[in-house]
Image (cartoon, rainbow, N blue to C red; front, side):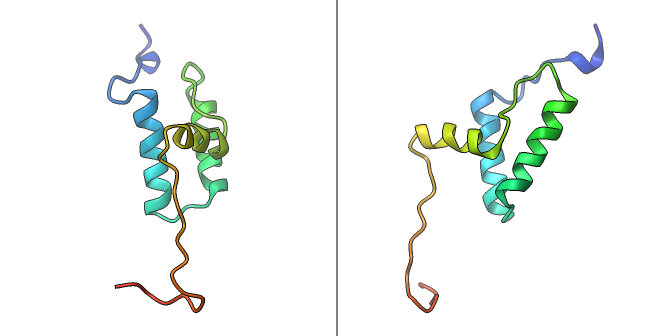
Length: 81
């Protein structure tokens, strides 16, 4: 068996998607950056089906009810303590 054809046993598809989503928001990445990373993963690992874009990734998370909520605290961008 080709060593590059091993199936990932550490992450399920859902846990991978949630981890990517978490990394995006913790590191302030743009949507386009995540889409580019997913493109690279899809090109590199053709036998694995990754989401094609951040939009597809976000749809999975939204269907679970785990979408992000932006809360406007103050018109002058004050900090809430």
